[in-house]
Image: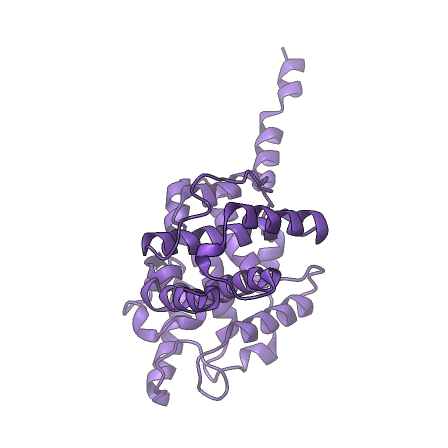
Length: 303
């Protein structure tokens, strides 16, 4: 089978059978396209050997000097692609006896401090509140993301029948067709969500989306990003605030409060707890408060 044909079939498999997110499929497509471009001409997948992969690695690291994260991602994509092809007996797996040891850089997630988060949530912007006739819709969006840690794509997929009647429980449609449950304990947020649902039902919006734009279509992630940037700027925050920062902030605040990391893993929808463990390294504020309370030198001086 030619490489281009195999790639198209692999991407259809990822989309239809594995039901991976659009962003994941797009990333796979871009990585495989880069490899195809490097090959310079279409080849049969069986002609890709270990030597071919090593030359590709040398080109990315030596000639193009790509960052390690990009190289790791592209090789992870190729490994998945060839493993499936080998399982379907389309070719031998060139990764079978080779496991490149590329360094993994652990980047700390960007979060809002407690002060920044509190200031953002308490800020009121009249223009944003008028997005919907029910009032502070975007304020509800921000609070919902901080409470549940959901991704912006998951937020935009929410339908009003994904919430329980009292809006205390929300069903989140996660990546890879993995659904999970989030819990909303704040009574004020529950009230706002109930108000929004009532408005949706009265307006007879056919799409059934919880959050819609001015045209009645489901709100798009880019719209949430732009509105959040504008809200943060109006609130006087110096940093560029993104929806994913709210997800990171939700996880960090929970861990700082003492919530078991396994519960945080379930809330965020991580398939591996190793992904969640990165948030244990960003709780510097909690560490500082604990050390100040311990006051080691002060207790020694008092002896």
